[in-house]
Image (cartoon, rainbow, N blue to C red; front, side, top):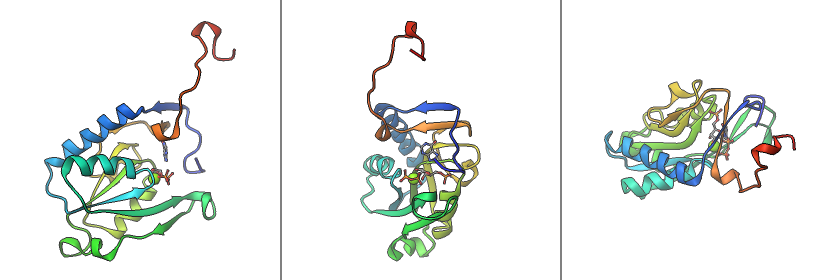
Length: 171
Ligand SMILES: O=P(O)(O)OC[C@H]1O[C@H](OP(=O)(O)OP(=O)(O)O)[C@H](O)[C@@H]1O
Ligand code: HPA
Ligand SMILES: [Mg+2]
């Protein structure tokens, strides 16, 4: 969460099962769009869908690019590239990443996507989820949620007790 991602009023919790189905749906959609020589996944959120898409499409060359957001590493609002893309991957398909599939879990404001697209301008950018601001930066995605929705991924959640409806939310 950050200034760019203020607390959102709506919640979209995603279970492991749901995420697997959505990531597999992404693989189906991508399978009709060409042959990919390599995947570049944006860590850390892109690691999970990248594994699923790689398995479905038989892609075995997987590279990471590390973009960390916001105040974790630097002043608020900025992004910092912690790990760039190996030049061997950038050089694929005659340079600029042609034939490369970039995968992330979602685009929100599009800031992360913009930085990685600059590194690989001819790559295909795919995410499982997209919000309206980031949507123009993505070539293929599965589900759109509104900008005022926060997506809760299964790796960020755990099982917790739910009070009975009759007790109300305030106990
Ligand atoms: O479109 P944006 O506004 O840039 O937001 C989207 C990015 O934010 C999240 O990653 P985050 O940087 O929080 O790190 P993580 O993947 O390590 O959780 C998410 O996984 C995307 O990569
Ligand atoms: O909606 C979101 N969920 C999880 N991580 C995120 N990073 C940016 N937006 C989101
Ligand atoms: Mg991320």
